[in-house]
Length: 222
Length: 222
DNA sequence: ACAATACGAGACTGTCAAGTTCCGGAACTG
DNA sequence: CAGTTCCGGAACTTGACAGTCTCGTATTGT
Image (tube, rainbow over all chains, first blue to last red; front, side, top):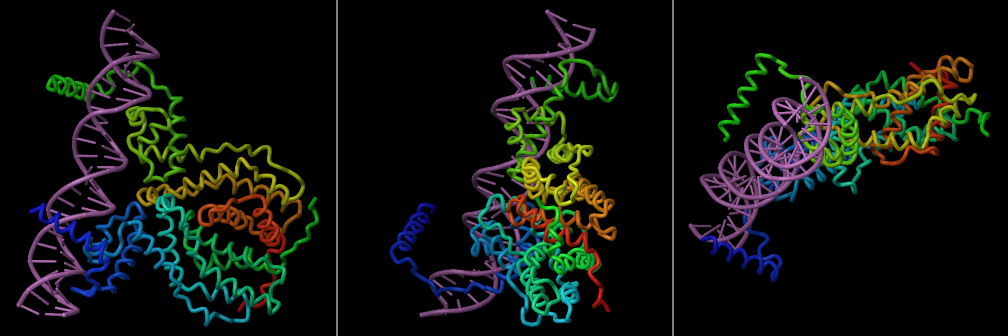
């Protein structure tokens, strides 16, 4: 019977090559609401086990899906993870209603809600377990995890600059990099929470002084 | 013949249990100069492939050693990696001859030699591929990779404080964290070099303003 | 010389996960 | 109703790697 099956499959492959799409609207439809659930389960497992520690069976079990269902949508583990990362970095941020308390200090602090802290730490755990994935797929080195936050911070600082609260000489891009790098270093290397207390210190001790007095007298330069 | 061998091995195991250490100074001695070579090869492979991408055969081939030799010294891959990390973080730094140019700015810049940049990036690559290892061995979360650098920077800043170059109110620990976190973020996430140009900007735009004007007038606090 | 151990090289074994295939059943189309 | 494609679940195949063992050789103490 294998011979018969082989003959049929060869025939269908030829038919594909000729007709390209012999049947498209037949049978049960794919349930695309499962896509999001599988991707969300993938992010969960990635955060817990990293890329190499994650198995397709784990994801299938978490999403209560069959592996065949997953391989019908993504051709490999790498593709699933790539889509999951894109899904994770999708922007659910409302740029319209930014805080506007009158001072840059309070604006920055208003952005640090407990919810975004927790979600940020989840993303950090995902990022930490992705080393081997990036070494195999160097093309998508994904710097964009902190992009939305940096964009918002940059907007707040530009507002502060235009109302004269900080210097027009201030290097806003550098200041935003300080925030994101301190957040990731504290989460990835030090394994401590980026909580309000620490963030307040960072703002008062480093960011505001740097933004208000960008040039300190280049006296000793040669 | 297998039976004879089994009998012998069982006999020797029993002898071990009775005498515990029947012979210690017999036979060829272990060549401990291979230890360093194997550990160095381990670091190399870790930097290139990460923990999960590294195989014992790769390390053995790189070090031109047999796997039996490796397992005679380390009982598992995890133990080998742990020793390799300790070896990598060993301190080859001469705290005695620190730069002393008269200004904090030049002192900090003097520490950034091309050699230490390259070695630092190698360590960062190792760290980046270690996510799954840490998730399996949470006890040794190794924040100590940047410790020596931070200690040196801290010393330079304290000297600057005692000669009145920066404020005595300055948060030196926070400033050192800014340096190490910017270096690791730039290497791990942005995949750019922590070169002299960028470091100079960081010092002039962020660090020196913060250290010289630690309090900017807490005017708008409520 | 001899026994015991180390060495590099590589064969061998057991486990684990990626990817494939099959099952019984459900949903959609004509 | 009949044919097709989907679903979750599970068995199966295959390849890779950790860890063990064997072989021929080199080095050491007695």
